[in-house]
Amino acid sequence: MKETRSKQPDITPDMLLRAYSIGLFPMADSADDPELFWVEPEIRGIIPLDRFHVSRSLAKAIRRRPFDIRFDTAFAEVMEGCAQPAPDRPTTWINDTIRSLYAALHQMGHAHSVEAWEGDALVGGLYGVSLGAAFFGESMFSRRTDASKICLVHLVERLRSKGFQLLDTQFTTEHLKSFGAVDLPKAQYEVLLAKAIATPNLEF
Image 1: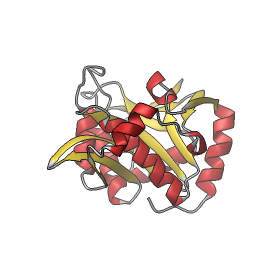
Image 2: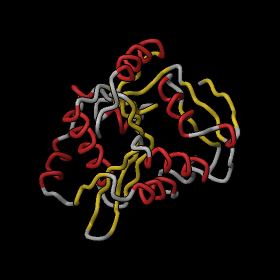
Image 3: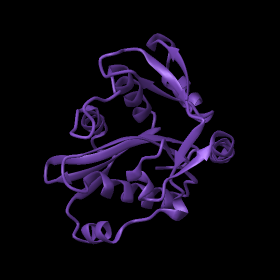
């Protein structure tokens, strides 16, 4: 993995979008470290939108409609949920700098959230960045069984319906591979990215 370190004053929302357009994304060493660094993986994770897989058990859970799924109604709260420690994630990289930058992208119409609600309670969600015909998934969280998984299913349905071409997951995990995520060499990913970025910005 390549990384180039850059302190916050040098990073603007516009610069962040340009970074995504060439395959870079920012991270921090910890939630308490204000400094960001650019990441450029040699192997990139994506979920091919035409090969997205939903297990029988998850499909059954979705049919029960356990949550009210909403889009872009609680972006800051979703980021907060993703930043909180969880049993499988004792620490996160989402610091105040990240929150500020992505809040700005949200105001610009380039960052979006998918949310799972139980009444007035936000119980899961995910957020990411849209640019051209690409969506870059950033993080997800779940406070109820299957909440983030169901949000991912709704994200993919929305991306398909809007004509998106690329769903970038940055890296793959066994969890994401169960949905069809694959690893691509950097050169192959860059071809897909260039095509998606060349498309005028799609409505999310």
